[in-house]
Amino acid sequence: MTSHPQKKLHGDLPSASSKAALVDRKELAAIAFERTRMPMVVTDARRPDLPIVLANKSFLELTGYSADEVLGRNCRFLQGPATSPIAVAEIRAGIADEREASVEILNYKKNGEPFWNRLHLSPIHGDDGRILYFFGSQIDMTEYRRIEALEASEHRLLMEVDHRSKNVLAIVDSIVRLSNADDPALYAAAIQHRVQALARAHNLLAERGWANISVEELVRLQVTPFAATRAVFSGPDIRLPAPAVQPVALVLHELAVNAARHGALAAAQGRLSISWTPGPSGAGFSLHWQEVGVGKAPTPTKRGFGTVIVGAMVEKQLKGRVEKTWSDDGLVIEIEVPAVGFAGR
Image 1 (spheres, rainbow, N blue to C red):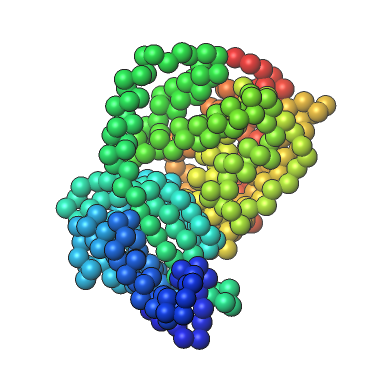
Image 2 (cartoon, rainbow, N blue to C red):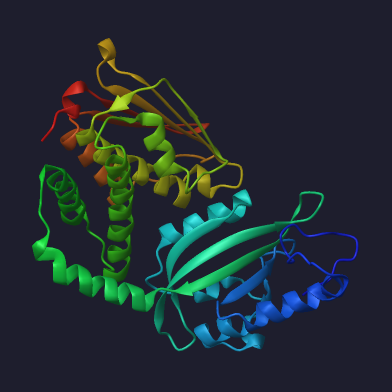
């Protein structure tokens, strides 16, 4: 490991229970790092583009690269044609916020073979609080996913579809029908992340016994993975009935992804503000989404997949209204969902 005599690292070395172990702990840590079966890398956060400065044997065996081909490079060389931009945005947000992040991402070995990588990032700070390194561990999830897919296929016909499942499936059907992606791999990745957003909302509902869910909790659930420290949330306690939770969750996911890829969260100084208020006469609710630091409005182009999904969920599923406005400060999106949008289906 690189040595810094005048600076301690938070969380970089194991504790020692004897003088001998204390003296040798750096050497022991280096040996443990090298010999562990879990692939691991360390990147230097003080240098441009976060180059890899340490990579253990398991990482080299997993990826097929040699040490000379890895050291000094940013980890993005593992990305490929079907790597999800959404997963990349989550990683970028974790690095920008200097926080831990766990992301499942499709990576590629040196020979071009894809593998599913469960990546965990952890920042290492000095005593002065400044970021020094990022530690990254990887778990190859490819075989697990293969077995999971087989089990899902085997049991799919045995699953009982009740009214809650029907609501989710109706939304998934909308996602699939409204997609016009040309690249099958990117199309599949986009579908997967949207279904995962629905799954998070579904799990929240299941945990609460399908009771009403607060708007704030749902906003934080869908937006925090992309903007842990760069978003401000405010609003009163408004409760959403179960049928409205999943479509609202998908809308929030789409807005957060767009902000992370093209909007305020993709800009160095960009900020996001989200607030909500009760609708007229206390029925339904209104959501105010503001992105600052986006820049000027983009040149009008074909409506993207995310824009279509937001419109479909708000206008058709929730019977509401969505309005987008560009200003010198950035982007403002106003969403209104009336009480009728809360009715069960």
